[in-house]
Length: 343
Image (cartoon, rainbow, N blue to C red; front, side):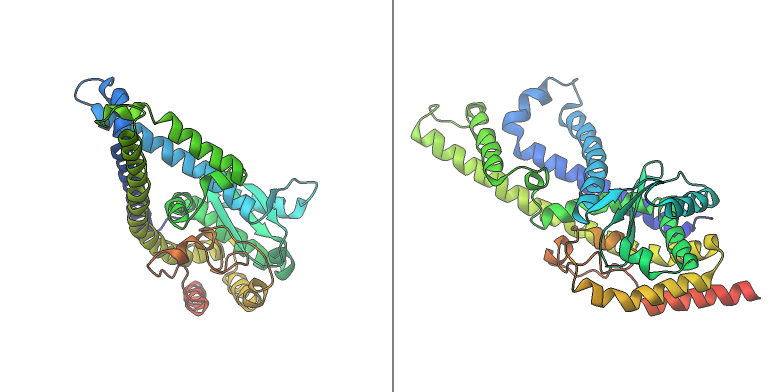
């Protein structure tokens, strides 16, 4: 399974954009929190200052995005990691196809939903492939192989990793509650925010020119906190827009490449085309009767409908991005592949 040079360039460009957005976001947060972070920055080696703080923090943010997005994607579609005892045929297929694609065998999870779809999150070394029970029920053995091979192509090309990273900022910008997704109740979240505000009250004396604990000091501090939250939210939204736009274009392009690679790996372009026809017919009806879909999962999926719910972070942003090419276009590309192989 060879890599497409043009897709590789788009993947690198999107990854660079995502990391730059992360860097700018961390820098913006550091700027907003500079009254409290100044002692840390001044303690760093001379000449490095804030840069020595922001660069490693950006690396930590990127690492956390991979882990967090994987966990939330699995949780939001109610996917559970499965074993050979539960799905022996499925795991055997994944191992066989992964060997043929020369990629590490991914962890396999199954979502209990009638909506037929699949997606992959994570890095080439630690990928997780998610399929729904609806997908397993809807496809023939050859069609299932083609879809699994399609998902493994995303792992091989590393676009699954880039898309995993790219879904994080748009999710945050779309009113995504990090504290809520960590499992904290509403009262616990209130307590966390209140504790943070109280803990930062005294250190703010470094930038507030007023007597500590006085009325003017307290009012200034409240305005400072409000400015940090409002400006930080606006910056997050602005940084998320180019990320989601580039990621949407990458998602559009990568589907053609993964279709072609999946058809080649499975040895049957006709099976890939059959899977697209079957799932394309089933998906609209299924999406109306099933439950949740994680913000950003639609970009990751084999088909654009996610696992049921309409809406999400991408739709809440003030731009519109088509994340998947039309199925008819994907079928046309597969017909061209079949015609080329018959020559």
